[in-house]
Length: 612
Picture (cartoon, rainbow, N blue to C red):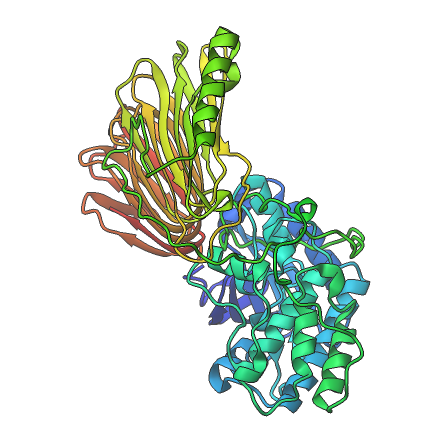
């Protein structure tokens, strides 16, 4: 997509790059048939690798193109040219709302009210047509020269989400503007757009977003737990009742938000004029914990937050589900206890104990019961197989426990392995390495400050062992700051392995040197990922990036061929033995494709990819 200027997509001559964002690149183009200036949104070519994508893309764009409203950018055309999907829209010259906020900071109250009213008209019309935006934010609001608002990118987030679900890469959206239920992967309703409009309103009034964080996990925590910050601390010249509008628009429960964007705009207008609002704004977290029966475990961890594969306008042709789904109540964050620092082992492979001060009698009797069960049940205790130790060490109460866990899985005579690692770590790190063992397929050590455990599923199919390491239930919500989850996994090097790693947040190190790989697939990721490929055998590597930094190291002297789609990532080839043979294709100077060779295919997302 970087080399499109001067080229033609269909009947559209690409003139210049307007901008590049999380969902696509947008170019200024000229329509040859009628000489019209248009905007062409170009999506990553690797989406075409999904056989169902083009059909979903076409269906969604067709549905969006039928929406005719003065506050929605019309779609003129769409298509695909030599594997590059694109959408043709009307060209608006005034820039985006995001650019206006970046340049001016907090906007005048009268301008904010006018813009919210215009945006609300477009959102309400779309909702009436059965279309939920799903990724509303200031960069998806264009302004003309008179600073009138126009909405775009309806449907693209839906195609992105379906593509991510099919590939296992996770949730698609912009965490800064995502409603709490979207982090829980609940079915979206129009209320998610109301919430995002509330975040945008706060940003227009203050010049900053209500919740900020350096990682998607921190943003998730804030959206799920924290009340809306007081706008009065940043803006003293606006009526106090505007805070009530913000609180209601960003209520944690969807049913407590405004029913329509128009209702929200009307309340904002009345508040700006000094009227007293008659509804009460629901605040996020009532003081004290809810009753026990209302406490619901934290949702399944988000797989990788993909800002990845930028999908196209996949639009909702189904009816909008009723805005009555029950959101899960969220416990307020508890006061942080003083935590004792627990030392980590240098090589956490075979930990037989995990010491941390005094333990109460409950731990002793728990161990006794487990031992008696093992003795009594004997060989029938398959449900305990692989779980060597799980110990909870109280650090300020049972609801705030550090969990350590050793995991081991026997090889059971398998002559090959299919291994799927999807621990869904919320921060921390994942390390994968090789080990010399003819008995165990996997050894692992896991420690977490948020509770829960990892599950190992193992099944023999013929002479192949199918092994899945995944997250079990989480009983606790993550602490707001500095929580950690670290996992080290060692895999046997004595049998060939098809390895699939599904990444989430945090840092990942895959030091696969010496591992007997048959294939390697890496999906998602929202942090820094380092992959040192194995120097054994002939195998294929497929990487479907999420967002963040990927570093892939080719073994010295190994024959290798690397193909990278042009995507949105910054690509760096830092390996003197790799020679570019075609656009985005490289191979080592000794490559002949014989034995002991690697073929690497990388579908980029957002961030950077470095091949060393």
